[in-house]
Length: 192
Image (tube, rainbow, N blue to C red; front, side):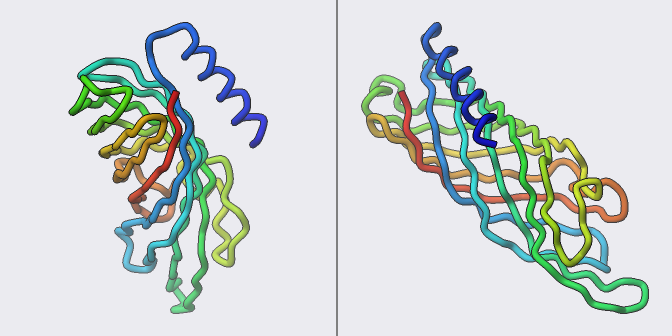
């Protein structure tokens, strides 16, 4: 995990050195849930976190590419065919690749203060699902998902504050159930 973050950071720093774009690092919390379409399973929201890096390029309109390590979790309750109740917290460790298009609302003062809005796809790769009482394993979930994200950000000098919503477009599960993950997030970051 540390090696992946180090390699991605080195790549992003080199991209920044040879372009007119800016880059940054961020971390924050997310509040996630899975909307279930099966009556035998339900889900409750839980808090997770994300750490990421990005490269952003453009003036009024901009593009942003990033890499995030994200942990989301939900509390699942299942009634099986024998009417046996089982519940536990299920956590996903993912590598996300957000690809955003955005609009700088105050581009004249970009290096001092800025307000941004953005949207775009977020491709997720599930790395791991830790052991849980429901016996969910990584193979029970879709290995790759594509979701959508909308958000807004505020930049002040070197600091950034972002808030947004990631909404599920793909089924979280690979087979037995049908559900879409979604989460709200807040990030604090440094840009350079």
